[in-house]
Image (cartoon, rainbow, N blue to C red):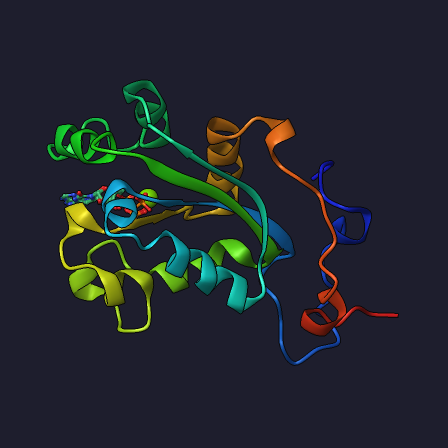
Length: 176
Ligand SMILES: Nc1ncnc2c1ncn2[C@@H]1O[C@H](COP(=O)(O)OP(=O)(O)OP(=O)(O)O)[C@@H](O)[C@H]1O
Ligand SMILES: Nc1ccn([C@@H]2O[C@H](COP(=O)(O)OP(=O)(O)O)[C@@H](O)[C@H]2O)c(=O)n1
Ligand SMILES: [Mg+2]
């Protein structure tokens, strides 16, 4: 949290509110997978996160290595589909990004939809743009701890930028 701007280094107070926020301002890793890049969905996916109100603090295109993927998907390396997953994820460039905002981890998971596109509601990225679990277009971290781990894996500290959105006060209600 040391790298967040000063006005973000606190959790939003929730006790006096009807709406209880589950978290504070967070960062998450979202990656457009090789099928999403090939199908030219990078712009549309970025636009969804921008429109929602999240702030882009890191962005790069890269060819993922087997080593990076074995750490990124360390819970899946023993799964039978893991070799296929690596073939898929190394089949072309990936666009990795870090998004920041209130509850961004949970909200981006909801925007992306369930792992299997067959279960993903229309309106989610996977529900709108994909059909098969092994070609599901996008990655989003599934917990705050996972996001911190993945961001460190995919980005160096200096590649993440702290900057202030001019419309911050329109998207956030700050307590006096
Ligand atoms: N049973 C499966 N068969 C084939 N591929 C799978 C299966 N389970 C997961 N995968 C692939 O592995 C990826 C990682 O699985 P995980 O359980 O982390 O799903 P996810 O968290 O929704 O996806 P991601 O981590 O890529 O955002 C899935 O997105 C999918 O592409
Ligand atoms: N049966 C499966 C499950 C996951 N996968 C792939 O593995 C990725 C990571 O799985 P995951 O369980 O972390 O799911 P997500 O977090 O991506 O939703 C998925 O996004 C799929 O691309 C797959 O190819 N086949
Ligand atoms: Mg996952």
